[in-house]
Picture (tube, protein in one colour):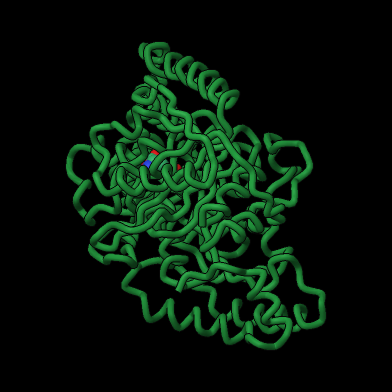
Length: 471
Ligand code: GLN
């Protein structure tokens, strides 16, 4: 069961119609029952039960915070003091956080209950959750298929009713793509809307914390709580946070853009295409205006994204050297060998590939040819995208070109096949804009399909209101 209406649930607790303690116990039981999905790396059962007792009282006395009673799982890249943090990697075996990520702290301050940490691709690098050192997560709609990645555990936790909501991260689609594959709602806010303090960095100029839940209203509420300035992250957007969860309910008529190149792209699955076209038609039928746009640079998005994120990752992951952080090898005979062996033993294959490519991209001889060029392309794409938003309110597309693929299917020797899963999602991160994935029906074989809406810079309020009209 996917939970869809947290505010209603909270009022039912207040009126004694539902017990929070019982809800938490039910979640714990379901987590145990569905262990084969491989969603949680650690479950904080005793703490969740103790919190439920205290918070249930608070709700009844009218002293509960905005999230009082919301049971949330967090992706294993977010720090939570005195709890394990491994970023889905062996290199952080046994590591415990010494402080709590700002995003997580804000949930706790509003009386949310943190039920555990969730499986993900190692250092959030992947589109299928198969790169986790703890094995793949299974899609609840079809256990032979991937849940998407990198926040795969977080999406399945909501899909399978193992908690009310999850907090994931999105560097190139890692919240929206698994949300699409699992039939739930995932929001990537504008870059710098939510503090990155306490997030294990992958590519710092792309990384965003983002909520996954069963409804637009619930992701809006989570955004409202997590957003806003933070003394520990000076990049956070300085303006006051809006009341994202209060929808006016007013029906507005919008100009909705879509890229012809996206709908005509070769790898687009037929059923995904049909469902997207039907959605576009439905939007037109209720009075919105559809605006076809041409964006020939679509094909440069993936190379730009992967060149820049690998460069940033190679630098960010320097700290896991066996001395400052991470697993220390017993085999190193001198300092250099110790670094090499510790990193060689600790990191998985995909992370190594990206560190090596990123280091190559940043090397003196190739820096201009790759890194500088990709930065320039990023600026051009940003300017062109901003120009589109002078003509339209939103740009829509399928979230992914195909429904969830089989576990192992794209895991072969050619990583490019896997990278194609991100073709529609990376745009938002390359330009820093907010985007949401909402469910858009299922295929004949029962696989969820997502619909993505991209909004203008810091337009989350409008984006969420429009998305709530769709589901
Ligand atoms: N799949 C993309 C990648 O592997 C996106 C990952 C993410 O958003 N963290 O980089």
